[in-house]
Length: 306
Image (tube, rainbow, N blue to C red):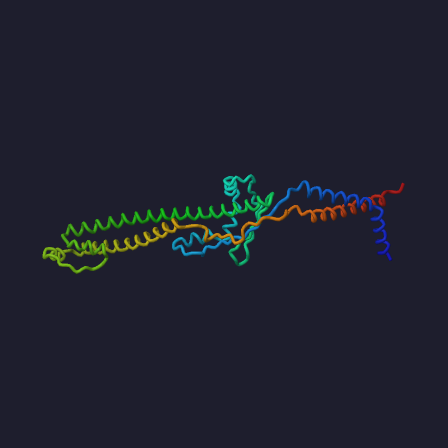
């Protein structure tokens, strides 16, 4: 019985303040509508799906560098580079400025697909700007890999030049010993070709070979081993240099970044959400009106008797 009386009192309080509640609710709904239609700028969304994969083609020594750069994680990080993308906007004569908060990204689970959603002030701008963002990011990643490969190419070239000079110095030292001891010059050719050769030599050369000391033999063997070791290193470095040079000349980012779904053209604004805003205004107005009515009742009932 006590609960029924309290409920009746609550209903009576609400009914007594129904006009206050109604007016406040209407005001909040009107404010929400005015803000939605006239104050909050409209936003339009363009969506796209991009595939980022580093295992599209064989690239030899370039594999590690391509695999490091062309990942969904690196791609999404580069999409947030406001300075670079604004430069691309200027090059395309786009009037809007790129704001990274306008772009949302989602890497699909267990895939190399990245979903992009970009908002702008018109459907055409959203579509065009998202296209520029995708293209400029791809170009930037392409440039990054090329710069890395150029540095690598220069490093390999320096290493190859250094090894070439070392080999030349060792061969000169080897040849000097051969000539100073009047040994068969065929030893020079044999060392360079790294193979044994059967040739006719003179009696004088046979005598010279017989008189070669153990120290000289040891020097020649050490120098020959150095020549063979350095030559093998040189061949490996030269092969890597040629691989990087060829890859650099033919490298393109297209196989690694592919647009699966082109940027879409929005059919209507994504924000503001007018029905939702009005509903929120209605709920807030109702709660505010009820709060004022109950506070007014409390204030009157708690006033001291005169």
